[in-house]
Amino acid sequence: MSFINYASREINCKIVYYGPGLCGKTTNLQFIYNKTAQDAKGKMISLATETERTLFFDFLPLALGEIRGFKTRFHLYTVPGQVFYDASRKLILKGVDGVVFVVDSQEERLDANIESLENLKDNLEEQGYQLEKLPFVIQYNKRDLPNCTPVEELRKLLNPEGVPDLEACATSGEGIFETLKMVAKLVLIDLKKGG
Amino acid sequence: MLGPQSSLVMYDEEYKRIMVLIEKLIRESNSKVIFLVDKNGQLIAATGETEHLDTTSLASLTAGNIAATGGLAKLIGEKEFSILFHEGEKDNIHISIIGGRVILVVIFDERSSLGLVRLRVKKASKELETVFDDLATKSESHAEAPGADSPFAEITDDDIDNLFN
View 1 (spheres, rainbow over the protein chains, first blue to last red):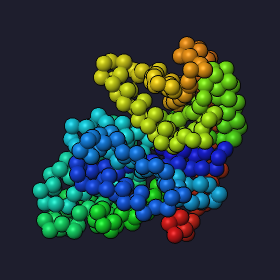
View 2: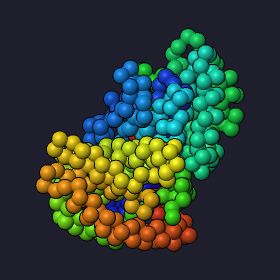
View 3: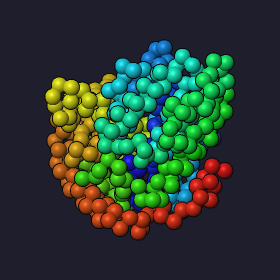
């Protein structure tokens, strides 16, 4: 649910990074935070455990610039990926405008990806959303690792609908801004339609 | 009531009415900062000593806080906890829900008291609720003519691409 503020001429949108535990959601946000100019970003908040696992969410506010005299702001959130934090994951999806699903490309995480994607669909439905109707991008992360499942296979399993998808490596930053740009564009196109 | 997929829209007129109400509340409750946040974490309005505060982060964490306690409430069979209070050494935070959809946050110190804040918040909540009801009605009537006055109805692919250059 975007927030259009005519009084301050601002538009705010919420993007959620979803995916299985340790797939690189927080690393995506950290890379964006590190590479964004000071005046375009707010403070990044990470509610994490002592071992740096996300406990509740990470939050990064970004100001992208103006469209037709309206300041465009994106609020990026991650969910905790570990299976038992499901109650928290549901809360973070409230009011979402766009979703990035971060895939852990390693062979041994294939089942975890499938389970997390199913979980995303269930949790969205519980909030009254349908994934097919939301701006949605899939990011195949960790492409630099040697034990990766081929993208074609991942695509067949995780992206039968053929939504926009791309390869990435969150630690080096490859594909990270491309992912953000892709989802932001879909969200704005959705707004244009009066979504 | 706004549906899960409709946008929250704020217009000049309602924004001014809200500012008048929260400025009155900050005076009458003798508090330091007041802000309004929607349940998704978007800051709607703020007043008081906000210059050294990261209001964007505060808004997001407040919404997370309300969402988490709301989850707790449901687990024990409550609809929600409509008031939260955090006590600090110097500053305290009073959080309440208005009309089931907007969060009112009042930060105060020893110049005020919990009793006074609660009393004034209760009165102001009713008035604020009326404004948000009007806002919901107004957005609904605008939504019936989709895109009619939306600044985004005419954006082009170039406009979007330019954002990333």
